Length: 489
Ligand code: BES
Ligand code: ZN
Ligand code: ZN
Image 1: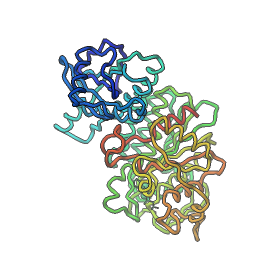
Image 2 (image 1 turned 120 degrees about the vertical axis):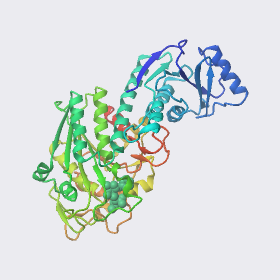
Image 3 (image 1 turned 90 degrees about the vertical axis):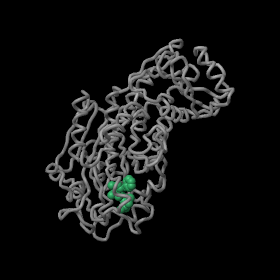
Image 4 (image 1 turned 90 degrees about the horizontal axis):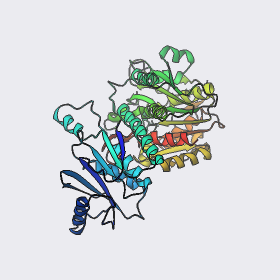
């Protein structure tokens, strides 16, 4: 975790100093004269215009100064500041051995906070799968301490401290999501959860193995797993379990690899299916963050984990499977497997824990990704109050959501001639994201306060969408959203 120091002005002696500049600023109070002079000459030569996101790196008396533009004070939003903080990271150079300072005197606390957030989120490297020079060079770019130079009050210092913890959890989720399926099987995901319970005193973990999953009657989870050589797991991770209140339940899809099964995915789609456990990883990461933040909220994470593969044992289109709820499901498409394992997990959660709030996160449908792209998660709920709260949390966290429909039409189209419900709709291909949500809704009581988040888009970036994420790869989307939702619930 990055160590944050706080220091007052006059102490700007870091090897690398980031200086945010608003348009129209000529002099930054408290900044040493030689740096101010450098800024003036840059501005007058029009080499640097303080436009939002623009940077200029200069050497001043042995110190590297990275000026970064914030644009007009009136137009500047916290989100732009977060993006700017992330963008300036690339200009810092090799800072692994160096001290980095962020000059915060020129901006108000809310902007300073967001600049820091962007900077910290971007300061990430997955160092597991590269070797040699490329890895060595990438490592040099990571800073390990950051000095925030401003007259900070206790509230801002606390917020920045919380930010470093949430960032660590986001990075943890990125690591889990990027792990290839050879290294992250259902059992490994369960071991990660168990590790959290070992590390944090108020977390407890219980894991059901294949035999227990079958014995419990989690038939859909067992069916999806049948084509895989690796056992499924049902991970139950609790924080503050001994509290009397009703829990908040987070359910996350833990498909460690989704080949599509007999409805095999084609090239171009199958390669990224190691990320199909992003919902589950986000649940683990959120509980980790809650523990680090010392949250007193009672939260239970439930992650059904399995691979979806083909073999002589694999489940097939036209199979009829009995779910944990007792309802029977006609399998029309083995690639619509996420809704199956989630259905069992949701009804298991509802039956055994009576939630005060239940949120599930899943890379559920390509349709949602096509509709909303890689910035927005789709939100589905029969409870407007939850959607409203999610919208508020989204505004604070910057994890974007978009409300999509879930109504009787979508449920209607899931009728099966031979079983209680089919796992894809008729006609298929239309309204895919709503159809997935409608399937889940069949397994959750109307009165249960539940929302479904389809994160098939934002769990992963194929190109740069948000500057604070790695240019491509897993994002860690959702941790910040859930932390804001839970802490304000
Ligand atoms: N894991 C996929 C959804 C997905 C697609 C996630 C792209 C991330 C990126 C899911 O299991 C799936 O295959 N869904 C099918 C549903 C269809 C068969 C109704 C899909 O989206 O095509
Ligand atoms: Zn699938
Ligand atoms: Zn899937």
